[in-house]
Picture 1: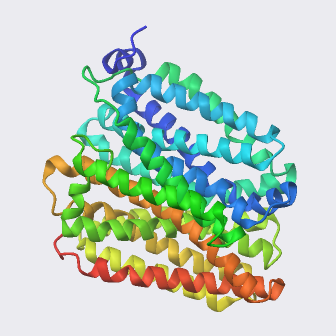
Picture 2 (picture 1 turned 180 degrees about the vertical axis):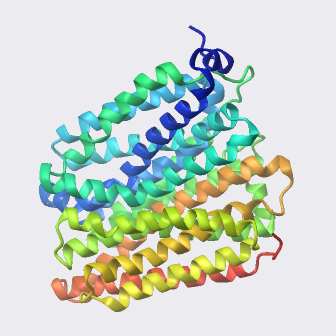
Length: 466
């Protein structure tokens, strides 16, 4: 049976693109949802394995760091193995890790499986976009991309809601079982629907560059994580941190000289892209860092159940969906600078509102302030996409889009790591008791507000063209 696009269209008829789009949305949402579904389960996992926040945060930062490197690996995998084989293999690997994860008896194997899942999620998203471009004619492509983007954006907010109910009724391990049936469906559906195409002249993977990137990511994150537990001058902090910084310098040097670099540094010579890349990192903190901090706060300070902690984020997902459409509509009428500045102002106000609530905020007050930040994200998302490429030539658009996504994911991983460090530091400084924990969360929200406010300056300096 043929699996090229023409053969699949003939076999399934005019509805084939819609079936393929549904498969890609469901599969991608499942993997992205897994990035934040662990958030509400962290207190239960910490109790199960007798660990603290510095070690538990690896379940999230490890996923996001691997997802970041997987994004850069995706185009090579598609060219080398073909979209069909790459996606089927990725769906199968994600399903296998979901089945094995609940069976582990120590934390580091669980973290390792989460890293593999993050790599799978990073591979899938760009490939799904490529398939949508190839499968849809120009007339229906915009709607298809909008629906796919909406699913990918809402998944991080909806994940904790579903996971909270599952954790309360079936235990923390159930959140790892949960994606397995959908991944199995993705493998079966993908075997019928996924087209097979690959490059006749696939590019060579920059293996040394890819290794250096991962050593840099995990070394720096590892050094920051161990500093929370053992201090800055401990060997377990200095060794991974030093290796990470050295590998980062080597990776940047290699990218500046390689003919096909994993990360095209030439893009940062453009002022608009350079400023937008910083906003993209802050966007990652807003998208992933807030969904990490709020469930922890309401469970450890407000003493919510896991289900109630997940419900806090449910309105934010719905608001983000509406805001994404409003932001897309505004992006045709306003300069990207105004979208970014307005979105960052709302994010800063949202974090400041959470800080002012302290430990006295009720359910709906927390929802309202968190939703305000999600409305800000709805403006930042299209604003970043527009501002990053507004001064670049057409041949750089693909590279700029990939690099912007890379910076967003990197911001999410580093943001969660730094938030955990700051939270632990302030908890100890405030006495290490329940009151100190509440004050540490309050100060962490103020830190987020300051970070969002600082990003307003590079956003404001963007040119005002539409």
